[in-house]
Image (cartoon, rainbow, N blue to C red; front, top):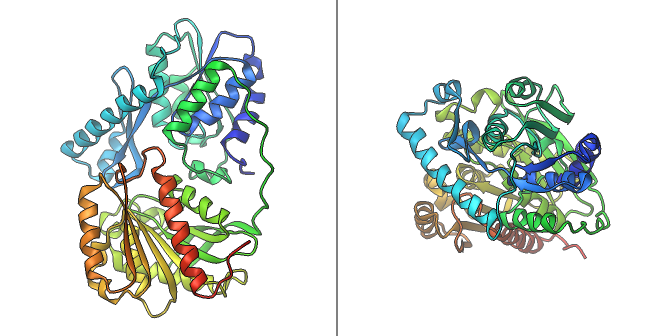
Length: 443
């Protein structure tokens, strides 16, 4: 059964860890998503809360896949097997490391401004994350805690893969979890709300924890969706996994086309989808590639094949009675935006609006002139190469096309408030064009 959100998971985990109440414990949250969980654990144990900063090393152009991690104190872990399978060169690995070391320093400064790090010497380090798939980041965190003088290192999570439990035993004194499902594929599948946690939220939780201020009571729950299901869609010879969410009285349906190396569990796209759901839009997040295709670079950038699958998935929606009569739109990210634009020009589908987040419209260059669907291109102001590609694409398109530049944002919109702005822009674009297509806006 999925957790409602990270707060819910943290409260449940806090009860599981009640035996640590009264011990000399420091609760260490892994930023960003682990901190809301750790906050509730620290509150339940009346223990201090701190962050332990580590950075995942992602495969170039497929950043969702971890090839290792970095941590404070010059901790470095690299999975040589993933490096070999993904064909990552020494130069590419060095470039990823340089970027992540800079981000690690930035986050340490952001989270610790105005206060000293909580000392771990001789104490129990209780490391908390929102979930663990492979364990590379958690393992780095455990080693950092040891290096900082922790007498015991305990890792505690709401959900973990069985394989990660085995791999983490050597670096911890104990691993504690609420669920370790055999069918584990990604952390996000075990949360109904897995929207991204911002740096500002992390900093605010740390300030609240330092003052030991209790959290406000939960707000009243929104009406549950009428459908919130994992689905399988056949596209030619392959079965693609997806997640379909339909709120009450939906205004339209938005199909997500993810970028290279990403999937339906992408926290960024799930955050945007949650915002669209709140506005009365149904969403379908699905995997453009099968598990066996994910490391195939040629397949990742085969925009024609990806667009064909997107068309077939869109046609599948016409057989879902709750959304079959609704206007449809595409939300494409990175390479997925190229597939979305290519598919929008296909006469087999009737698409009312397209939104591109940090997209690669150049990958659909041969079809851009044929796109008649209103299109919104969203790019970060610091994503200079992609911004140039989108500026050129806008001049090549002959439809209603706007370019929205998010100030201070980079390619993944990880800066505070950047992804929220993307979600608002996308929501307004879809609502406007779905309403002009004849759908009634929700009250």
